[in-house]
Image: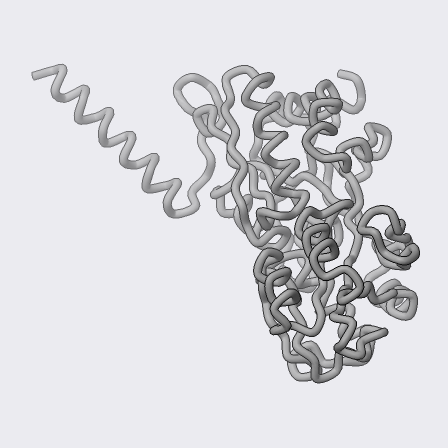
Length: 325
């Protein structure tokens, strides 16, 4: 009878583990000493965005180079949802815009209290893409009044940025535009079909979905400059936003487009073991050339800038890596 008892006990333990995971319980260290039993989930973003592409490449690097671990990339709504997933224990690593992550860490705006997250690295910058159909008569964000506008996936960094841009332009995000919360693939299709007048997207360069849009629509789609909104955003949210340009060669536009950039960060739970956080940071820079082959934004991940994740606290394991320990 003893083997049966042991088997039943093992099955009960497995059932308890599954129940905890299903309920968003703590990611556990298994009997083999591996965090979450060696399985890591990476929360990324929309399937035609840079988060998703780099997340897949990062998962492959982890699986091949971090001993004992297998990682998978998951398509999500991005920043806000990603942080919520890490806090619940549904994901282990997440891409996020630094403004959203900072608010999560300090318990502001979208978050009612500080969230138990830590940073692995500050990575490349996201660029805000505001694009309108040429026949919609939109030349500034304020011109979106009464128009059909995609503000991005629900609980995404794009949605956060879109709502702030509308406010900065003097528009009520709830009533000033005909807001549609759509993923990037849905948004691109809506722009092509004419069911949308304009869209907002925050992503790296180039974003494949935007390349598809501009290649298909050519002069029927135009970028909207954001010079007017930057100062108002800065006065409300601080220096996290900075002025930049999207060069004309990126999407084949007639000229460079003035826009806004915000950094991205990789987020993990505060409960992640130091050794694992160290190795996850290390693999990025040991194999950066492989990530660059996945997407060119990876070349803009700078080891000197990577630990500058404030106000998100750098994970102590990642800090050991950057300190050379």
